Length: 163
Ligand SMILES: [Zn+2]
Ligand SMILES: [Zn+2]
Image (cartoon, rainbow, N blue to C red):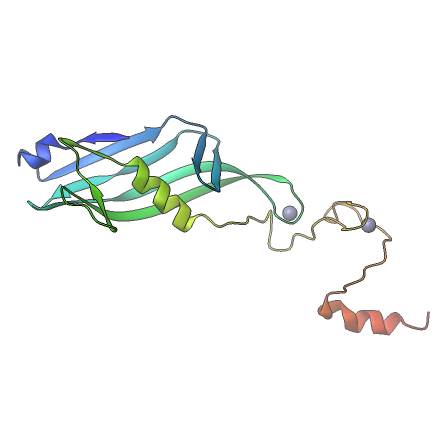
């Protein structure tokens, strides 16, 4: 994801709009893995103040994930705003400017890692899988004995005691 910034550095332009995509079906770094449904899109603008290049914009991704409760496959749309700096003397918060380009990829992956939740749910009300028989409790019920009853239902259970 190299962005040619020679026009900015030579002051031929003050603002450089850009739109780039990542032609890969996976974003991966260490333990972080994101499966992409379509090429990830990065749209924004770069601005040079004589010292640093400020890059602002939005990352759009359509990802494949799994509900952490019922394991159903999900497709999620993500939109993540970024506002970052690039410089010839980079440090922890500032990305490097190479000869006449900057590479957006590291910055994009950093922003994904910061913003993408570790767990997804198909819905807030997802009932998950029965830990005993594995049935998807969103679609069917089972007669397994539940050891740990949700406190919200404990009162109900008391009602039926003595049956
Ligand atoms: Zn679910
Ligand atoms: Zn069950």
